[in-house]
Amino acid sequence: MSEERSLNFLEEIIENDLKSGKYTEIVTRFPPEPNGYLHLGHASAICLNFGLTKTFPGYTNLRFDDTNPVTEETEYVESIKADVKWLGFEWKHERYASDYFDTLFEYACKLIDLGLAYVDDLTPEQMAAQKGTPTEPGVNSPFRDRSIEENRDLFLRMKAGEFTDGTHTLRAKIDMAHINMLMRDPILYRIKHAHHHRTGDKWCIYPMYDFAHGQSDSIENITHSICTLEFVPHRELYDWLIDKLEIYPSHQYEFARRNINYTVTSKRKLLQLVQEGHVQGWDDPRMPTISGLRRRGYTPDSIREFCSRIGVAKRENMVDVGLLEFCVREHLNQIALRRMVVVDPLKVVITNHPGPVEMLSSENNPEAENGGHRSVPFSSEILIERTDFMENPPKKYFRLAPGQMVRLKSAYIIRCDEVIKDDNGEVLELRCTYFPESKSGSDTSGISVKGTLHWVSKAEAVPVELRLYDRLFSVEDPTDSEGDFKSFLNPDSLQVVKTAYAEPALATAVLSDRFQFLRLGYFVLDKDSTSEKLVFNKTVGLKDAWAKEAKKS
Image (cartoon, rainbow, N blue to C red; front, side, top):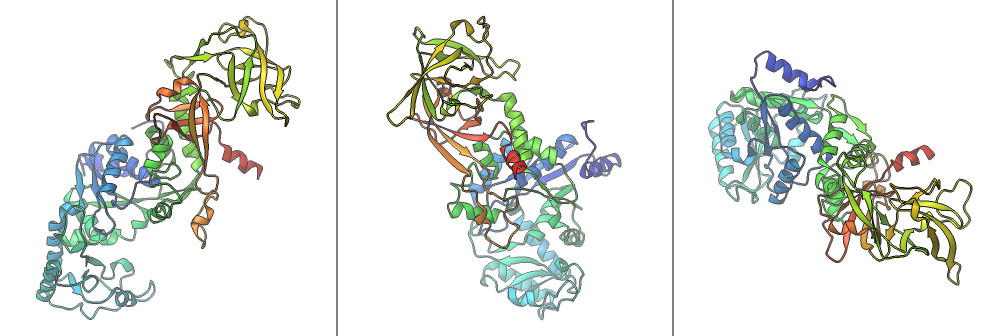
């Protein structure tokens, strides 16, 4: 355990359990439902469950909660496994709730035989009407006192497929006046004639989450079943079922989920964004999914660091997405290769450059201990950003202007001598002089300048497409309203630069590379790239532009 921070409450519980001898090792599980792609909220749960068994002796299972065949797909299973591995974690056992369907059915039969479960014929509407309120007790179902024999017969007939969906359920017989409404005869099994992604058509009855969850934990000898706070009311039923079935006593612990501003993490809402075409898929780089963050250029290290910084607590709060951006910016600063890319080019002719093309040396990453160098071509015709020139500049303008000098990154100092315009007065090109003795790394010119510009050699420039991503929503809490959350979509969340010009070193980029485009931000190669044109996604800016805007307002 690191001495740099104190233990969180779950770590304290586990440390005490190990010291007391209650356990010699701990077993946790990450139990996603395969009905969508994992998002940042899941990343926090992954880091917590797997992190605990990296800190303490034990292991973590990956268990898919596949009890609802209508919404689950193998595609989601594979994406979840890929995301967990990408984050840097390995599970000991890959399990599925469907692995236990036979055992869960036997457990249900045991409850029936104990007189603790019954088959109910009420419709969902009738059941809801009899549930009561937090201040008023519910009403017993007229089918609650069926005999054990009748209940077993009906349950077997449910399994055999004699009944249609919604006509019968198996309910626990607990207390319709219980203060915890989840304990008022909860449903344990329902009928669903649907094809399951693993068991096919073997089953037409499926356990409810509350029945499958605790029993699956018990079957796997999970010592610490970690859930979010929304499951606090469920813990009583979790314990009741384990107690009545007399099985391994797993125990549930709850922590507070972390809500992230400018973000939506509801699977239902994310699916809506995908299906309605507001984004280009689950891995759209604007999505808070792990696959979307990966495609945008986020690193596993930065997401793990973010999850570590937000910590584990017992109270919910809102986390600033700027912290996530800070974490990735800090990591990329250490590992990203520096490259020069010009977005809005202005041609510069170096009138005294003798030619041919000169190869200059430039650092790949000044922050890295052994970052190495690359060769950058320098010629008589280069491209700079149009915004780096001003014909009539204000005072303290340190970029290029008539008669003014600047340094070209890793190259030479140049002076603007002449401005060439078209008939409409638009600047077409600049004619400049360079000072050969001012070469970066061996400057003997004695000239002092305050501005440094990035640039590319015109003839060797590689055309690339840039996709400039921003936050998907324009308000801090898109769901804090009775209106449609999609009305808060940021219209500027994606801007595309069809043709920018890059130094030739970028032509060999691969998907795993991370880049800092000088003065532009951090970028990563996108999977849409072709041999004809490379496409780069902007991961994050060099500075927190949103914080700057917030100060203005």
